Image 1 (cartoon, rainbow, N blue to C red):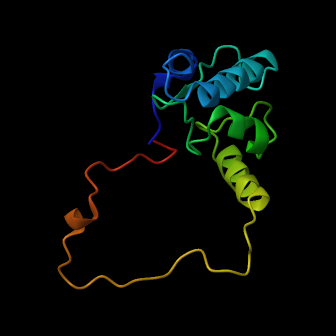
Image 2: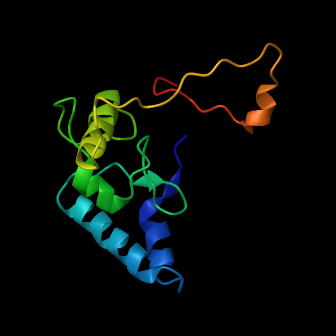
Length: 131
């Protein structure tokens, strides 16, 4: 799920909130750089969570600058709607953060018959990129 908050407004507020001013001030400066450099289209607002995490990758603004890449070859890097950009950016993040390709990413489990999926705490189902 992706947030629909205006990230710029959220970061301005959080930069002066008194709790994590330095962190959010860095994110605000990164947002201004993203807009100044034209990394997103001029008509596209930066949308994300109340704390600034953006797109399907949930990158903070400094992470967008560091890891987001153009996987589609279509110009701007769109981590909100473009699957190629989303997956290329996630792969780039994992590569730079030390992903080791020979290690398993998880462990397969088999749920018992009749298992109540409600125990997993899932209340809302997210939407796919196509939706």
